[in-house]
Structures are given as structure tokens and as C-alpha cells.
Image (cartoon, rainbow, N blue to C red; front, side, top):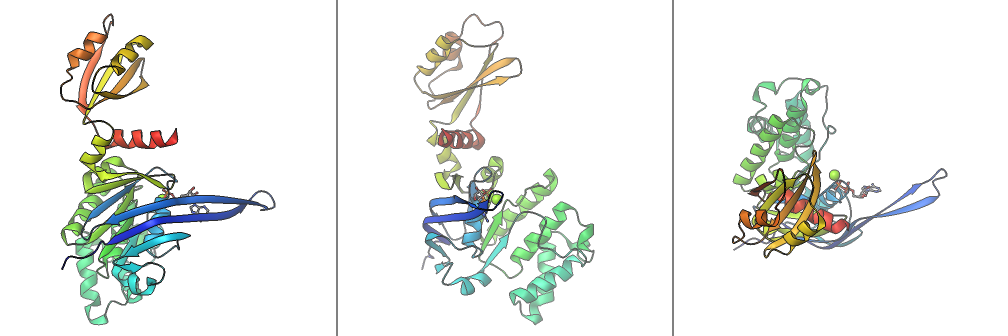
Length: 327
Ligand SMILES: Nc1ncnc2c1ncn2[C@@H]1O[C@H](COP(=O)(O)OP(=O)(O)O)[C@@H](O)[C@H]1O
Ligand SMILES: [Mg+2]
């Protein structure tokens, strides 16, 4: 029998009401989520990508039963996150970004003992399970040191150890590498990949496009509380008109030239930006037929002209999407 989706949501909305102003007399209403539909398959690693304030943490907290949605359907492992929260909690794990949530004055192992008791890990298995997760996150040699001596990267490993301690079927990771140095971030991503290999369903949020690209099978882009795209990396590239990105640089272009480039068959989008003393045009191209010479031929009389092609990155697509939403 095939399992149902690990995560299933329909039209999820969340409104925050807070007071501000000198007398706290001004009621501010924020629509953090404005109708989110999402399905994540069992065993999948799914990435929710979005800029600051998009609603990623709000959505992660709702999925992991920490926050109640204002309206909509939210099911994890076939259970309603509001009505079945107590039954669901032992089967999911959550790692929120940041430094909080650990006891600094005791060792990593003692922290994990505390959480194991909290999660109801049976006593006879407890210490063996703790050693397993310590080895798993590569904290073996530091396990008995006080957490206050830990680097940011070691603390994040301990957070992950805590998140998997009770053997969750679905793991929620909110910006798992935020604030980590590049080496620790790489180790964290490696660990996340190894969890997927064990069959854990992973839902992670990030504002690093390369991270989503590196880790995730499918990605959804969240912008101002709405999903503006949802696809595989290859699918997202196709969404903005093709796989090719061509960069053209010179000391300025006139309007006629840019218009001529726009009219070349296969060019779907042109963005211009200053690049040092030069101007750079970034072209998204949806056909393999267009040669770089076709572009050069439209741009004569430039003292220094460079035309080069590079692979469209997820970052390009992501910026296009978030930009389009903003206008
Ligand atoms: N407790 C809260 N009270 C009021 N507004 C909130 C609260 N939590 C989040 N928000 C607002 O909801 C929006 C989404 O926030 P958040 O989910 O933290 O976004 P992200 O994690 O993508 O940066 C933001 O505008 C934020 O200010
Ligand atoms: Mg957040």
C-alpha cells in the first residue's frame, strides 16, 4: 500500500494582530500567510524558499503544531495539526534557527538526556539512542563538554541531534544553516542529506537559493504569504523562459539597442544593472538556436563589449519570481 502525502495543506491563512503606537492603540493586522496549498510526498526533501518576512517560520510553526492557523486545512502524516496535535507531536521533529533552546551549563549528552525524557524515549534505550545521535551528528568527541564552550556550528549539530532523537518520520528545519560558517553549513547539509537516505521526510526553509538547489527535489517559492512557484529546479528554470542566461557588458547601451535585443526570437526577459563602470544586460533565452554572434551583431560600435553565456541558476529564477511579485 502506498502511503499518503507526509504534508498536505489547503488554503492556509494566518493573520497576526498586534498593537503599536505610543498608547498601543493602533491595531496592526499582518496577513503572514494568504492561502498556502502544499503537498509533500513521503520520504521527500522539500524546500520552502523565500525572502525575510515571506512567512516561512509562520508556516513551519503551523506544520509542527506550535502555532494554530487562522483558517485552512493542515495535515501532517494524515493527521490534523490542530485536532490531532498530541498524537502527531511524537512523530515529528522541529529545529528552529538561532541559538536558543539549549542548556549552556550542562554537556551535550546531558541536554539530550533531558530532551529524551521530555519526548518519552524509553529508559532502557535512552543512553544507547543518545550515543547513536551524537555519533550521527559528529559530536562524539565533544559530547561531554559543556555547551557554552560550543561553536555556533556545534550548537546547530546538537539542535539537529535533539530534533532526531525520538526518531521522527517528518523533520522540519527552519533555516538550518543561518549564521553558520561555510564549513559548518556544508557539514549540516551533508547531515540533512544522510537523514533523507534513512527515509525521513524533510521540510526545510531557506533564503539561500543554492542551498535549496543543492538539497531539494522540489521547491516552493514563498513571497508575501503566497506561493508564487512550485516545481523541481529544472521546472523552475523553464518557468522563466528557458535554461540559458546570456550576459552582455559594455560602457552603456542605448535604448534602440536594448529594444533590438528584446526583439530577437527566443529572448524572454532582459534585466539591466550597473556592474562597476559598465552596464550589464542579463538575457534569459528560451531557445538553443540563438548564437552569441546574433547578439554581437546587434551591438556594433562598442569599444569594449563582452558577450558570454552561463548556466541559469536557481538564484536567477528566484530573483525573477520575487521581483515579479513585487511589481
Ligand atoms: N507573532 C507575530 N506577531 C505579529 N506579526 C508577526 C508575528 N510573527 C510573524 N509576524 C509577521 O508575519 C510575517 C511573516 O513572518 P515570518 O513567518 O517570520 O517570515 P520569515 O520566516 O519568512 O522571515 C512578517 O511580516 C512578520 O512581521
Ligand atoms: Mg523565519
